[in-house]
Length: 159
Image (cartoon, rainbow, N blue to C red; front, side, top):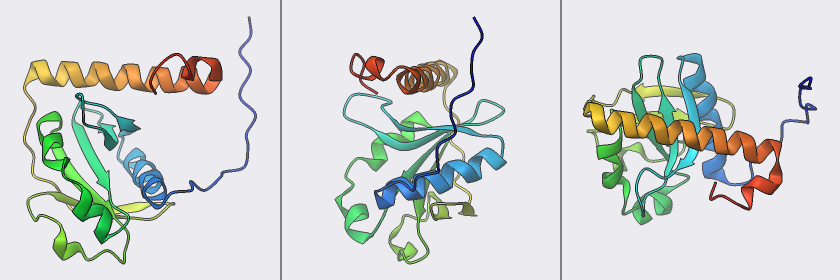
């Protein structure tokens, strides 16, 4: 069996502002050697916007906020801290960054790229937690790929 490359479709701009920020963040992190997945569930009741896996196994979580109301409505972000080595906010250039906690990282982004403005402090995961997160990352990425390749799979699993 010979695998054929997928047809390359035009690059559609994601519809939602947070999704556009996530796309720019993911593009930028790839330039630093990180691979990413969007909307990963580290634990029941939590769903991170972007999880990034670095070349040395480091795990970053990035929450994309499209505006002040979006940030103020987020009551779960502190629950993400125990699932990553570094935590970042990603916002656009119009966001009032003074609202964001200083003890977290800051990424300015748009739909096409991003810039890490403030590096998040590192809080290394315990080895057992890291193993769980790398496995979740791998399964999430594989299910997304399989769902893209075979849309019938997406209806069978929660991706």
